[in-house]
Length: 224
Image (cartoon, rainbow, N blue to C red; front, top):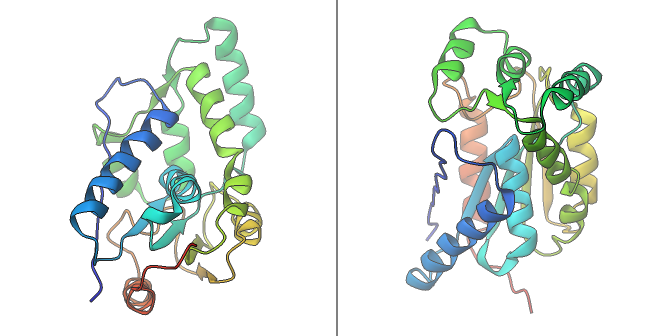
């Protein structure tokens, strides 16, 4: 039997960005689920920053994750120099003073006006971040390749949208190559932008492929 688990981790608007606490919270949830469902496999799917969180969570707690589905987890971005300049300018104004960086990111993530409006209006999407939080984000994302090298036995399925104008495909490929597990696959979606799964245009072929991949990896790996 193949069990499907979806964990939605939400922070309140205005909560401090704390990646260590995020990983700790998610590991606690996985431990509880694993304890109550010993016979069912646990698959994690994360996208963008969520993909990086899922990647690092799996590297730290491989015994709790049967399979990892990781979409565009890289921190290698287009127009990075422009973003870095924005951070530097606002750093001078105050390291803890939030500014609107999200509108620019959303604009790069999709060319569809409908999606831009939806994401901008989502109360759980923080458009305003402080320079300190953005520096912490950069530091967190820089750990992805090291975390990938620690994943030695867990099956991993990595996705990248070919039309992505936010995260460079090269960065995702570098993380994929760093994954130590031999049971890994990389899928390029030709029609997809940055977010593949978080919109209504996720190709049915991708969803069908994921379900088949999960079914074929439904046995928990022996990590001993």
